[in-house]
Amino acid sequence: MQMAQNKTEENVLNDAFRSIKGYFLYAVLFSASINLLMLTPVIYMLQVYDRVVSSGSMSTLMMLTLLMVLLMSSAGSFEWVRSRLLVAANVRLESSLRDPLSKAAFMGTLVTGNPNRASQTMSDLLALRQFITGNGAFAVMDAPWTLIYIGIMFLFHPMFGIAASISAVIMILLAVITQNATAEKLLKANQLTAKANMSFQSNLRNAEVIHGMGMAANIRKRDGALYDVASDEQAVASTTAGRLSAISKSFRMIAQSILLGMGAYLALNGEISPGLMIAGSLLLGRALAPIDMMVGNWKGFVEVKSQLSRLREALAAFPAEIDRMSLPAPNGSLSVEQIILIPPGAKIASVKRVSFQLASGDALGIIGPSASGKTSLARAILGVWPLRAGTVRLDGAEINQWDRDELGPYLGYLPQDIELFDGSIADNICRFSEQDSEKIIEASQTAGIHEMILRLPEGYDTLLNSNAGALSAGQRQRVGLARAIYGQPKLVILDEPNSNLDDQGERDLLAALRRLKESGRTVIVITHRTSILSVVDKLLIMKDGDVMKFGEKDEVLKAMSTPNSKIAQLQNKA
Image (cartoon, rainbow, N blue to C red; front, side):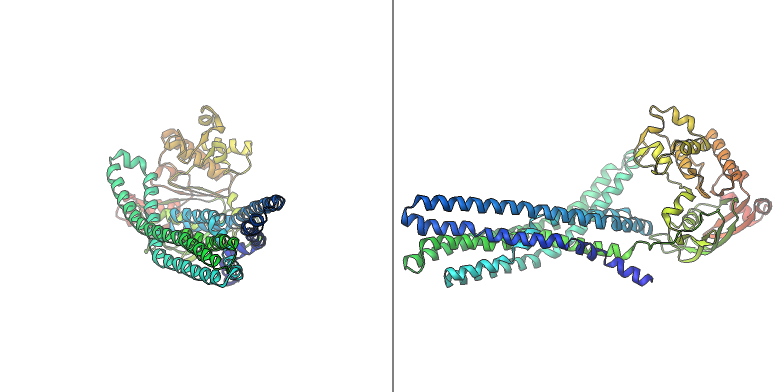
């Protein structure tokens, strides 16, 4: 079943393209009409030279001109319809891919710990959209008509057809040369540019540290070196492509002029009429235009190939979860069974064969020195990071058996690094669900920040950005606590919830924990401060990813009270 699921996800991109096949079929049909109507100027020129000029008939000229205007107006209308069809296909494609790609990017960030790759995925989707409505797509639709135009030129005169065939072959060879000369360089330039952009974005997220420590000049110098390398590769590729594009355009103009001269020669010898001389030159220009356009837009073709490859890889690497049967609302009992966790990008396990059980309503404190695996354990319990071995069960069901959207309201999580999102304080507390004033205020009162929020100029409607605006670190942490306990979740995990709190904030936190405990929630608190342990029932002590001791708080504290015990030494380090 899992193999079938992965196979399906690998074909998501193909399915999305199949869903817009109808749009492209109609666009191709309109392209055929447009290219057919593009013969109008050629035929008009032929009739003017061969009939109107020789006969001097003004009525014939007026009728031909009127017919030409009507047909060319129709061509313009068809061009507009074709553009609208591609725009509609563009919208349909994005709507089909946005959700699976967004999920894949989100999961990729969780697994790899690299948000830049996720950002690249969405950038690739936007670039693909632009290509579909660009000149490259029009050139592909118009290219088959080159053969038809050349066939018509054979009808004009065999020499015209042979000259047009030779010109088309040379143009195609120029396109192949452009591909061979620029594809690898453009790919390398794009990779280097992406690397430089990732470094720049990372520096922006740490702008406060960079500015505060006077590192800006050095950081800019490093980023500048990365951009210089990318720019050099891009310049080489663009110079080569520009040179070949210029050669292509010059050759097309030369070919048209030579054909005009050939037509004059044939006309002087009486083999064709003067009208065919002009018409042949115009038709050759129209025949070579799609090839010339493809050469000019070759960079887009190279880039879209790379974009499609990256999108396929993202969808195949992080397939969407299958639809799961809804499970009953959890009570909060937790079982951690021999779990092993290796953080994204790391090679060494941060959690090693950890096991413990909590009944619904238990309160557990987790302590230990830095880098002992406490935060990794919290992420493993929540299913944020995938396990290498073992299982985490909530009410007997593996955590990954739950539908995440259904399970979310029953989980509360306060990470060490508090991230608040663009929106109001109320939006952040209610997790951007439909606002329920009573629940929002209840969560705020439990977290002890109701009065603080009311003192803000806009109260609960105060808008925050990703950096939480004017809120202090302690205020952000308390808003994060209100978000974690919003909606009465059954399992609440708090990672260093008092790291930025003052004395009053810590008293409010202890009061909130007591309320959670009294209401029967299962609470896990990771802390370095022993004062918060007064509200827990059980203790778990970690070191180097292993459990040193787990049990009832009094038993663990008793073991810690022995001066020479390993646990006491560990607590002193903590």
